[in-house]
Image (cartoon, rainbow, N blue to C red; front, side, top):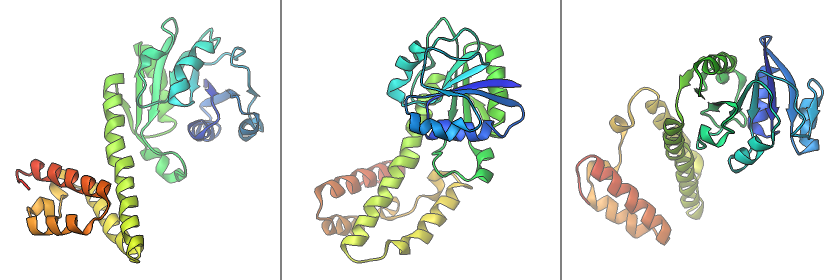
Length: 254
């Protein structure tokens, strides 16, 4: 049985806690965080504390705090044994104290509102300095998901960057589309079947194969018409930049 400590009380910590507390191969020995109110989520079934220097012994201590606090928090912890792990996509394993056994356990997913039956599909990216530590973290990651990948810090940073394009930027495009609809009293709901179908295609084909639209076709008249319809300078820049990128990808020019 793996003994685990969680440092932090946010979404990732709650997600991992809810997974581990129900797994017979994991023993949650402690949750540590600054926010006493947030600690109430964990206190019914696990010892909690706001003292970062007084930790119980565990096989794995997982830091699940804001990215910019990982290095500071990691150097405050008094760890005598076990592996110290963070969960961030864009932070190197090297920020963790070098005298400790170190690792990374990065869930590549937006965890707020994740439905339990989808949990096993979440890619878990694992990194460790020592092979024996990787094997421990791989075992722990398999408690979360069926998809565990060995990814080093540089690969993980690039994967996180790609995720920003695929998820955060695409969602912002949906927002901009909703604003255009709102400004012209058109229901955004009419776009949902199109969005759903596009997402479904990506699950089975490469993004390169499924690209459509006037920029892909090289339809200069429609591109110019759309630009004339946009009164917002920023939207014009976004539309132009994306259209140029699509045309460059497929060997066409505006």
